[in-house]
Length: 102
Image (tube, rainbow, N blue to C red):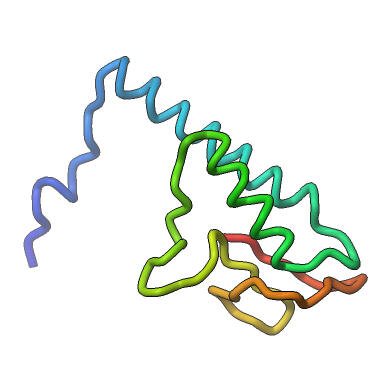
């Protein structure tokens, strides 16, 4: 099977494009860091979602998960046995919970 040239060759970007990519990566890092700062026992996954949504708005960005195939929230919060794409709700985190944010 032959690979499509566009997928087998990494893109070459200009200096201006590279700076835009760096800015977007910094923005994403700040959003994830904001979410991680609020994770502690007693906080709901809805609160994590609110923080993530507000941070997106602060940057003038739109949260990718929101309304994607009717997903109702701005972030996925998977707790403990939830493998992925957990929907934030009023569940309070407990000490020892494993929380994945994506």
